[in-house]
Image (cartoon, rainbow, N blue to C red; front, side, top):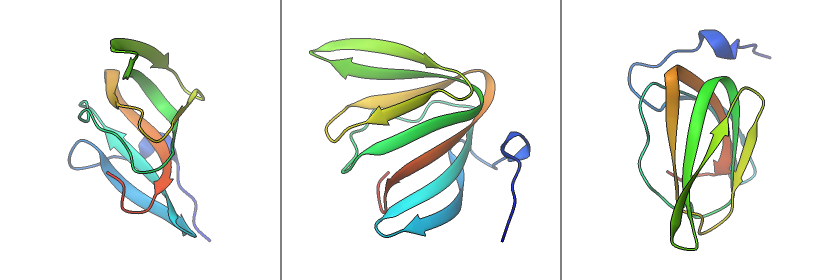
Length: 104
C-alpha cells in the first residue's frame, strides 16, 4: 500500500508523471506541470482530474478553439478524436490522468 499527497508532488520537468497504477489496459498517473502540454488527440478516452492548481483546457470543436477552466475537483473527459491541450494557470498544477496505456 502507498499514500501520496498530490499537492506536494513535483517533477523535474513539465508533465512529469508518477505512474500510480495499471488497470487492464489503462494507466493512472499523477502529473505535475508548470507549462502547457501540446495539441494532441488521444487513441482512447482520457479522464483528466485537477487535484491542485488551475488548468485551462483548450479544445477544438466544430473548427473553433474553446477554453474551459478546470479548478480543483473539476473533471474533463476527452473522447477519442477530441483535439486538446492543457495550460496550467497561475503556477504549477497536479493532475490525475486515467488513459489507455501508451497514450501520450
